[in-house]
Amino acid sequence: GTSAATDHHALIEGDHGPWLLSLAIFTSFWLVMVAAMMLPANMNILAALGSVAPGARSRALATGTFLAGYALVWASFGAGAFAADTAVHALAYQWHWLHEHEWIILATTLATVGLYQLIPTKRRYLERCRHQTDYISRHPDDTPSATLLQGLHYGKCELACCWAPMLLMVAVGHHLVWMLLLAGVMLAEKCFTRGVLLARLVGAALVLCSPLVFLVDYCCH
Image 1 (cartoon, one colour):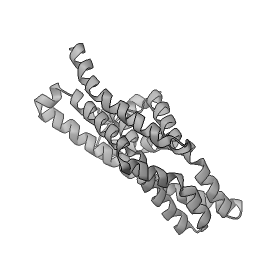
Image 2 (tube, one colour; image 1 turned 45 degrees about the horizontal axis):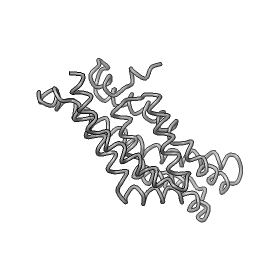
Image 3 (tube, rainbow, N blue to C red; image 1 turned 30 degrees about the horizontal axis):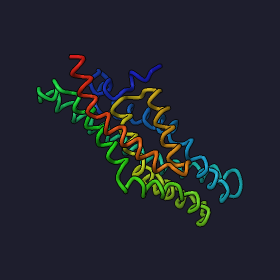
């Protein structure tokens, strides 16, 4: 019930004090959203970490340090996206034409996300994410430094795979329906044998939706 207050538009345009405070608020809620959307697809990796760490305390430490590295990657992306969106808002206020045609921002975002879903880089990093569990099983090391590096490595791999769908969350805000929809898409991409095909279908749909943003805006005005 508080998602509207933590939306990036509200934090940028509202009266929340210094910009750094708004950044901290956004990043905190961003990590909560990332946990809700991404961790269900990564339970097998956490289970693999638990299998190589003897004892409950070691498992907890290994899981904690892995998630710390993982969260650091996604927090950096969220903070960067918030900073970039702040710049876009400032540009829209200074550039009257862009302010009158704000649909271009959403249309460009949809096209960018859709095109990334279609290129080979997406497929390559999706395959790497799928094999991360095997890598942990083949290289068992439950020391805090090793699991922290594993979390950083996997976080960067998953970021390269999933940054585009998550960028939509910056564009549309912390909306529960979008969260459920995109979380389901990313889970299916990783877990189903035809996940690459699904990624391409989603990408093609987003590219096709990009010009529809103009049509909707034109009809409404």
